Length: 398
Ligand SMILES: [Zn+2]
Image (cartoon, rainbow, N blue to C red):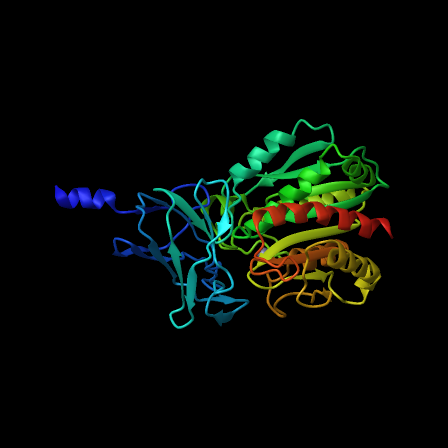
């Protein structure tokens, strides 16, 4: 009986909610857990990435807890590494499930490797995630707020491998074939919740009642793929669809059954162009742990005509936003892995198929020198607004 009571008083780790993910959970002592990051590998069992963890602790007492985040090593583009998670990427913690702040008391042991968190509970329950989560439920909540706007339109462009709807949102005040058009893609990779927070910031800015927002809707037709991997987001995945296909590679192969997400997204672009519409620019927004950069369309000579646009955009982002690039503007190679099929990103594939001016932007999870702190949720939302302003200015100057 006493043992049973003691067991009831122990903290319990849960992941049985949308986006929740952990591998093995080991209790070392009543106040010390070893928590393995689940990680995911691709369709060939390669390119393991282990950087999404999201869990809730219930039944915490006032005693500090030690949480070791382990099983981090992986592979990226076939090169082994010690893991994406390091001393530069402390997680966020929430005591109410809504507001998030960074964990500030932690150390990183590069030997194992492991990230050791020291958490002082403020109540019996708290949540921890690699980055503040943004789930399908978060997007549904946003949709509920905006879907009656006369300048908002939604269409379903297909289903995921897991049977979820893939949606395309259009935000514009009046549509005509000669109007400038910008396509935005968020969350091709499910761990990159920061991409979604920026997307929400962008969408809120575009649909706000401010005169400036009305101008953005007058000038540009915004075609938005708000969440490109709903299955991955639901299960707390990393960067592959349910069949193991990386949704920002594989843009050079046809796989309507194994990777219906890519098929639907490419078809949406194709239909738009076949109907005689234009695409002035397409941007896919991603997160990395420590890298931040902008990459333009593949530099194959034919894409040289996009260089002035790319330079304008890079300049605007650098001067008008919190974008803190680690390197100058770059242009994509033709593929990420020469000689191997299924290795083109969206911007490589759409350039090869349709000559689209595609851009890929990476934003870091780690310290942003321009802001002087780790990026917080509010920074992501704000950047979304700054991003759409910069994009509209970049295409306006053409
Ligand atoms: Zn990504």
